[in-house]
Length: 306
Image (cartoon, rainbow, N blue to C red):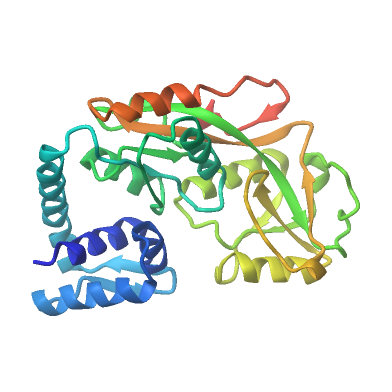
């Protein structure tokens, strides 16, 4: 069995999307599709059901997944047996444009001797499963459940609080504001089609909306960041939320405005998740480098993060 195809199958299963799997593997989406198709042909079964939101494991894919993970773990153990301590630290960062990428980049600058393998998985459930199985060494996620309810052997620590900003087009009623309070956003339409039900980021923004009486809409298909920015730029009514470290590029004529939200400042709580018995020597360095966020009385975060 082609282990590259097996690895690609597991990456798609973890990410839930061919595109995100391609980013995690540093290959093209076409290459991912070809590898999965070749594996399906070799096995004579269908492994995924394609949906509007990505790829869902078919019944045969669900049966194959634990065996595929076993194959990859066996491969990793074989490789590690001849190069102990030299394997790259494998870290999940949820998205390539989001704050955890900056945290990992800062760590790399402080410790350039540490080899890193940066991947992106779909949500906290996939990340915790990957940490537990040893597919990754650590993950940056918002945890919607308390640490005492994590699977046995899994540990977590809150490492970064990221302020939330409002993003509007130039014609929006709030476009000229230098700052805005959550209370002032009541009655305004905030559009976030990427808030997938059941994910940690959807839970965060659901709680934010409930806490301050905000209208956060998730209607319509999620076509990605660029179409979202196009819509926001042209709309006098729609705005969206972004993290203050989220890296976004848009055409100059969009003239989008990033407005800090204050009094209180909603902060997205990033935690580091790792397996307690993971012996990788760089994991301790990463944890020491990150530290913990400084408490600030003038911030808001959901009760599950407190």
